Length: 211
Ligand SMILES: [Zn+2]
Picture 1 (cartoon, protein in one colour):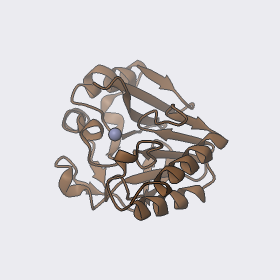
Picture 2 (cartoon, rainbow, N blue to C red):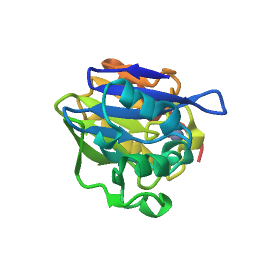
Picture 3 (cartoon, protein in one colour):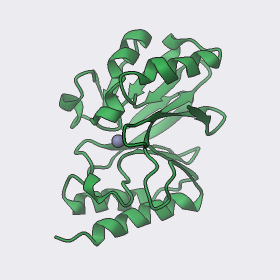
Picture 4 (cartoon, helix red, strand yellow):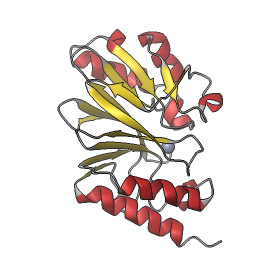
């Protein structure tokens, strides 16, 4: 299932075995489309390609695929998407080895559709996890970098995670899209002050973790 979040931003929600969803974000520009993460192996054929074609667009308009981090629910559709669209697959340099389909290291910025996103390195869940921030549109894509109450997803030193989240708090965000509907807010599309609430709640969870 998919949802139009902004004029040019769509979200695809792939059901997970846990009953949750993992998301693919698509940013449609005038003549190119940016994709963030790919869900599972079936996700491109089942959801992403029909969405693109349903908008009257061509699959070869996908200009880049960005992976927020290495996990299977984020890179599972990479090879299909890469093969069909011909798009390069970009990841943070610390994730490259763990993402066999990745062929391009993320720089400081990446163009998705007609928007420019800053690449913000946010280790904590994974060493090369990134968030993508459109400063003009005030849009933040967090992948799994903001884990809410899921403390088991803080896979690195909690201080590293907390530092990443504190840097996110400095951003001016009107729309935040997470890859899963993490609690305490329990949704993946957060607007206005909800973004700050979610990040602050996530920091709180990490601060209160027992050593
Ligand atoms: Zn995930």
